[in-house]
Length: 237
Image 1 (cartoon, rainbow, N blue to C red):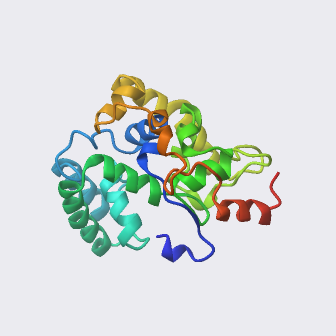
Image 2 (image 1 turned 90 degrees about the vertical axis):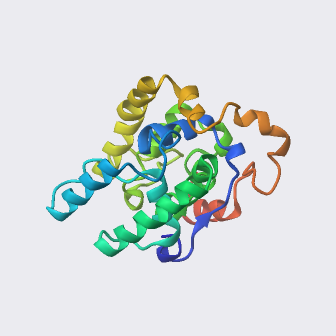
Image 3 (image 1 turned 30 degrees about the horizontal axis):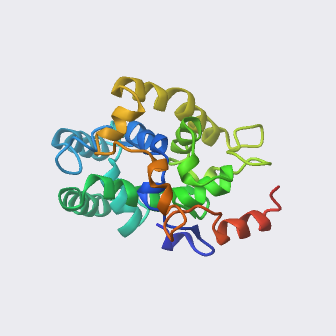
């Protein structure tokens, strides 16, 4: 996906140690509640239901899990044809069985698209909110989950933040508002709170606990140069 987006790409890798636990919890709640408890990339029942829906032209009843989205974002192409879906199922199954859950989360947050030619939570947190990913709040994290379905239709608001005002794409704004105000909070309540959500993938500390390494190459403690260049080219304030 990133290569197919074309230049110039805005991106910088960040360790999961330096990502807000609110953000991690929001991904679990919004994208894949069973990531930490499920064996494999998806349940057989969900896969069968999705395959039947695809074959009959019906809406997807559940959506892709985090491992499925991850292999799509790293290895595959943007389409919904049966070949890509089949490859995605095979690769994601191997990925989920071999790669630890925290590593899957780290890769997912680094390769997810958060705007036009904008990839990864490091670039997204600086571009929209002018803060490192370790400082993202629960509301900002939930907002960003609403970006994931239609990242190419999302804009930065004048002065910062996600554009959900009159100039925003209506569907993008609806997804952002829905994620931030309804879906993520509701799912987290059902999971017992954000701490319980991150514990499902073995995280019991905070990003602040890793402050001694935040100035390292994967700490994303300062605005990446390509984010600064994007903002300057847009005349952002």
